[in-house]
Amino acid sequence: MINSLFSNLFYLFSSFTIVDAIDILVLTVFIYYILKFLKGKQANQILTGILIILLVDLLSAVFKLNALNWVLSFVITYSIFGLIVIFSDEIKAYLASIGSGFPFKKRETASQESIDSIVDAVEELTKNKIGALIVFERNVSLGSLTEKGKIIDAKITKEIIIALFYPNNPLHDGAVIISKNRIVAASVVIPLPEEIVERRKNYGTRHLAAISISKTTDCIALVVSEETGTISIANRGNLTRNYTLKSLKETLKEELIENAKHRT
Image 1 (cartoon, rainbow, N blue to C red):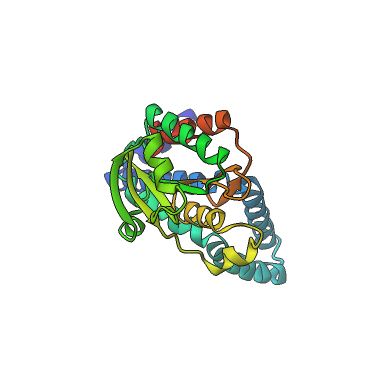
Image 2 (image 1 turned 135 degrees about the horizontal axis):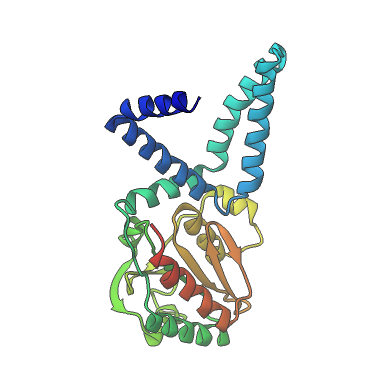
């Protein structure tokens, strides 16, 4: 029996070619990116549902439950199309991030000094209830949006950020884009998909723009409410409100510095 086992193993490895190695490597990378995409998107529920359907489909084939097997074949096929439609924006953003992040690279969006300046500016903006929208570009390029705004290309300072959003400033009505530790553009208009506007009618324009841009790219967007002075952050299409200055600084540091060291 042992000899037979070793014979089978020897045959397996002797027939192993470079094509087989590439095949396994490509499959491994594919599975890695699928799992990474599902992370933070109710992955447990999605994977559980898929496994249950596949298990029932397998059992129906084993026990020759032809009617059930026939129905499940349609369910599986149309479920795939359904997932593509449901996650269309996320898929586009994720494919873009793969394209911009391959080969693997690290990109620090902002330094600790810049984050301190941004938080200091936000403190003044909230105190005076001056609305603001600051978008931090990460791996997915925002060049197509940046080109439609006013190119700034300035060092990140408290004074410049406050000046850009100060009322009656011709550049205040729009987003400021930050990339590679620089203020690259201001007065940037972010498109608002109709579906987002319809689903979130109780949100202001800045908050809707933040949700939209963070859903279709891997950026994060910082919003200061003009009405209440509250601080919000949009990330992956989700908006979290009522940040304190301390929690804001911690979140920006985590997302723009610490996570950048591990992001691919």
